[in-house]
Image (tube, rainbow, N blue to C red; front, side, top):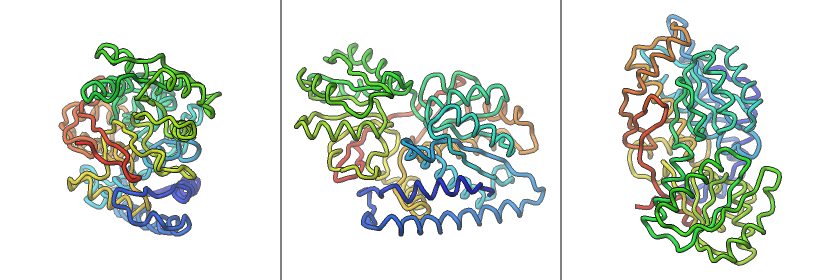
Amino acid sequence: MRKNSKLITALLACTAAAALFAGCGNKNAGNTAASTAAASTAAASKTEEKAEASAKSAGSGEVFKIGAIGPLTGGAAQYGTAVVNAAELAVAEINEAGGINGYLVEYRGEDDEHDAEKAVNAYNTLKDWGMQILDGTTTSAPCIAVAEKTANDNMFQITPSGSAVDCVKNPNVFRVCFSDPDQGIASADYMAENELGTKIGIIYDSSDVYSSGIEAKFVEEAKAKGLDVFDPQAFTADSKTDFSAQLQNISAAGCDVVFLPIYYTESSIILTQADKMGYDPIFFSCDGLDGILSMENFDTTLAEGVMLLTPFAADAEDELTKNFVESYVAAYGEIPNQFAADSYDAIYAIKEAAEAQGVTPDMSVSDICEALKKGITSLKFAGLTSDEITWSESGEPSKAPKAVIIEDGSYVSIQ
């Protein structure tokens, strides 16, 4: 497997900086960052050497080339690193088992820093490399920008976690995660069905397509379910370090549940500031909060009792999840999050769709895309994020959400 030095450096930097999850069966939380980085370096090198050897052994010299794009550096690096790592792990497993339709897979990831323009640059780099299929991008705004490029090239794109509606507006793009509207609706339904509180406050980022998309559908569904929703409290990308005004407003209104359809970085600040002012409601979030437990310099005890809807829980007892978590920890030194699980499922969905349609790497990018579109819409896929996932021609998945709660520094499934 070829991999540029920038990617290796970014991956190792992210791994060294990320703190290990305190729970989920991980007994190495006290390891130093240096030992974690060393272990991850060795494991990643071993995986890369094995993949390179496999690729060189291909008799025809032909391989599938799958690319991935995500933020490997910056504030959303927990997401992108997980996506790239899990795809790398899946590709290594697939190659060891003989590849796709007898052809091995070459894989490469690129950093977009959660920036749309840089994501397009990353796409062009991967396209020059010979990419035939894209696993990405990780976050919504970059995904929308790149989706315009893949549509022009008619390249098959499956985003693990780009949840904005427009991510899959083109017929060549599919997703593994729930869409923003679906997350908003499911969150409101869960609160209503489980009678979580009497009055709900909301803090959201009105400048972000992910956050505002979830918020809009949540409010609509919550009101339809008869929930008492206080005026949503907005912030923007230019004002996301001080949430005292929003917290004071929802606290004064008597909100005993606070919905946070935002990313883990802003959520960590909100939890910290709420604690300082003595405000202790039930905090409820979506997939964007996943990653908060491995944030550097964040007191994870402040996240105790936080609930979120997510399609993946690392403490699940099924064999697929246990094997994935064990392999991921061995390779990268940390418990995988939902974004890793989504990406792992994306690679295996590509494999199953390609095998169903007899796809080979000598086909054109456009022909591969058309075949994979037929293949994925005919699948009943059993993966990490659901026992059964199906896809419509719209690119949307159908699967059941799961709820987890943070207890003792780990995500625990709610039965």
